[in-house]
Image (cartoon, rainbow, N blue to C red; front, top):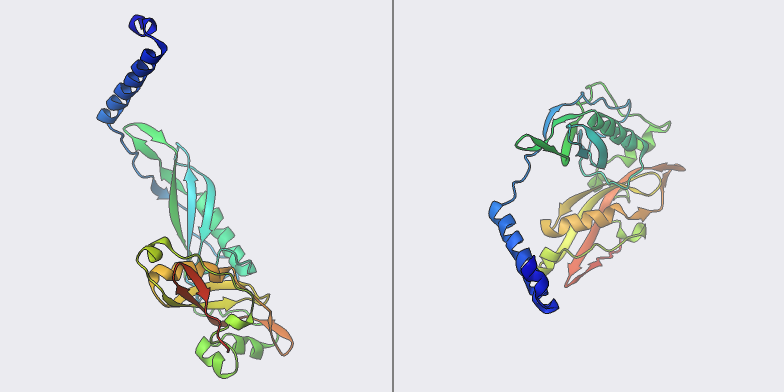
Length: 261
């Protein structure tokens, strides 16, 4: 310290810099030990609300959680699923199922992340698995069951009756997907088809990549989830419909491939 104070301002500056590098060198020499991963110890069985089964989407909901030093879940940060359902969807049955997954995850207990005997807060992901529905558990039908049956037909069958197939031109809002950096770097382009289920109000319930390069597919799926359509009416009643949204990735930007249906 006496030497440093006797130097000029410029000299002191370089002395301090040397001390900083010396301290950093010591830190790098000692290294940094990553805490161990938190380990799930227990979690109650997931119970789905009555009528909340989404048979075509699967029964696993992925929940991201924050964990404190004691291994307790303190918050649910995001919920994804089941399957390829869109996070933006407000379908009542889907919201009920995700809320059930959230409440299940909040009651999970972990062995906390540790370095030696010291514990640390951490994050983790839990797959909340709902049991398969009973074989005799049939989906709820609206009063006009014929309408529901027509709306639930696969896209290929709906196309014969004027529904399904490529539905780009029927959208009221169809955002362009972001061009993935990896695809741009590798000069990957081409068409991607996303199979969607449109709710009664015209919002997208689920979006499943059906065709195209996997590097482009996720960007297309995210964009498809944000699309909206005019409600489809059969016999005067709004119904769910399925169809295909296509995206054509060309060059550094993506361009929607608008086709005539």
